[in-house]
Image (cartoon, rainbow, N blue to C red; front, side, top):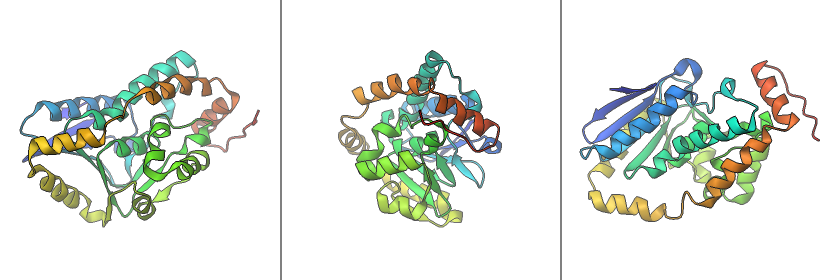
Length: 255
């Protein structure tokens, strides 16, 4: 089965969702976004599915984040993009069943945010994690309201204002990833973990997720949606995005 650009495969009581645009590093295109939403809706609808695993196709990327080519400098369009993107990035949190991210490569920007919205991250030893939006004159949306609860306020600020990636091992030390496994064994490890969860009492697992996730999705999400578009009005964002598209170093005015 396929939803948009996401392959959907059922393995016993586990659903495997594979982001399948490897030539674009599985960036959050409209096809990927549609596929994530529809795939996780199917997970919730199917009583035989107990756990979902999300991974990226290819050797390089889990998900490289937003498709910069789709960015528009109009604040209203940027706000509409944020509303759509937040729904996708929050989908793993809002799914009633456990969702595991099997991060096989880079998880940058929106890809990082998709991963941390999952209940657990199992990372390949080749995985890298980053919120590099600062290099475009922007800030992460979803991560700005989630990351500090995972890594602490100071580290969240550092990751957001420097934008450099952290290794899989560092991500595990920080509490971003649950465990790191050899790259060739990633899917097998994620599936074993998923099957362990699937064997546990259905209602107790569902309630555990609900209780631990209590309070998520409140007013802080609205602040991110409302605040993000104003960055697109600044010259630094225009320069950062243009430089990325033109494959050159940005020259920020810092005004």
